[in-house]
Image (cartoon, rainbow, N blue to C red):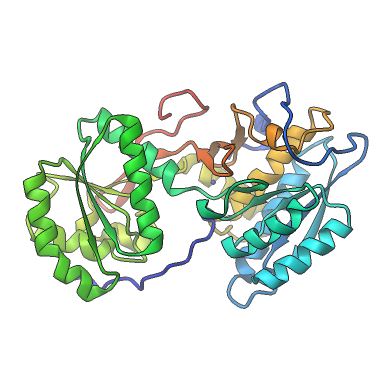
Length: 389
């Protein structure tokens, strides 16, 4: 049996290239009203970037986010953004200090911070001044009001994968999740996706978040699957958690590619070594367009001499969206109404839009692991309303 990857409970933004030379822009022409500060369209717009530059565990992520933000600023052409960078230290206290300093310096919108608890703290401070926050987090529990999350959410992945499963005749789904706060959120996202798409949740099994918990749960889980009549097994765990273990034990207990389609809510190609796991061959997962990701990575590495971290594209997307709105010349460009325009924005990893509840929706491809490689079996949509949405 394979060793169980170390379990992690981190909830941070991860990881989204359409570049300025390809016409990166806001898709709507008109700007609706909404809460947020007005801007002076004749001057550079002050944008506060909050990153964990001095964090002992996340400094590399902070550096990558800052680099990507500057890359985006340089791609804005005639749009003037005054990018002001502040160090959060990776803590809520540091994020609050940075936010207060940025507001004193005249910030009209926040980009970042990275961690959910930090973004929540910044949101509370910024709300008193009517300023919106575009966090790099993917945790929907902090979203709402003046706080938006840029990270890809469980809901975006679940919606994309469940729709695809229904279209492929695999819409009777058996859901497996760990008894863990993050994975329970993932399970809820899958259930909402099923309701929206007409899929059927044929059964649900959970297990304690431990290696022995998985082992003990497998026999009953397998019996429940066989009696459910399901066509697919949708697993919320990722490769940093229980997915590799489940992928080996489920086939040993009769849930095989011949009688079930394996679907992963999280990225199954991270780390890349997981692609060689026998139990993941044939599995589906959602991913940004690999071609766009590679294009952005090439652009970043040409500028900085290293590859970006997976979250870097979120900083580029945030600056690009702000720049696209400011370019339209409206004083209310950074209000909630403007940020949540229905047509969204073109991001380096595909189209995305911010939702009124503070969450987001991203255009994702469906990929399958075949012969230890990632193969796109349904391309990412190019815009909202197209195939895949």
